[in-house]
Length: 342
Image (cartoon, helix red, strand yellow):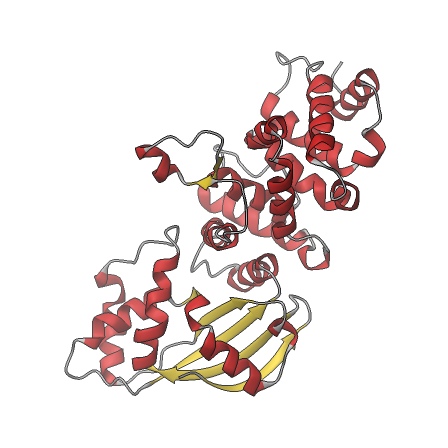
């Protein structure tokens, strides 16, 4: 089992944070299987890469702590060590190994050696967060500079956990799934991940193939840290619920399935949420049709259509209460002024 030493509250990410330990035996049985939950996680490094650590394990080294995380709003506010420990024991199969994939894999390699001692201690950090968004915020701020996993991998990993809730009517499929069959009317997982990235960074422009990956990741981390995510009252679960509700209308669903629309909406809704939350699927259809009619006035030969669609859909939904009752001509003027396009 996992024995916790202390528990306290991280007020920034609104989470319970504990330190504790378990044995190698328990880790191999209960934590190692958690690595299979995320197909997007980094591939395990070549065996040679962690050969030194494997030898050290057999000699009796103490590995750096593994980070284990859960998402549960009720227990995120609890600091009672016994209650947290009982929660972790009951819900261990629902946990996420946020840091320690390579160490656990190396531990498995060492297990077959006769010198392996399954009773050796493995130390743990345990985080119970209110929501995925804040958990990811902490991962990125802690990992910045060390890069055990890039910001993009972290976002992809938690996006998969976030959207596999089973309570949505919309269908979300991966690129791999679409290779073998067609899923008409479904949302692409990559588009949902892009929308989540936009939500986290409060920016609709996170893609730029001209920037090398390492620099892009550095910029992405900076955007997340500057977005004051921990101060937002809106989480991505709520945005997915809105997407699910509006998708009951076929025209609204098709509008949201366009990646640039989805990205702009996911950022804009953070400010327009109180109004948008009260909209019906038919109200949203009217709003999206108004947007498209006004956007059609843009001169596509003079602009980057995708970029401006993201930026203007963000603006539109940020101020939806102000724009919803405008006629098309007035909204066109708003868009033209916002983009300085003549």
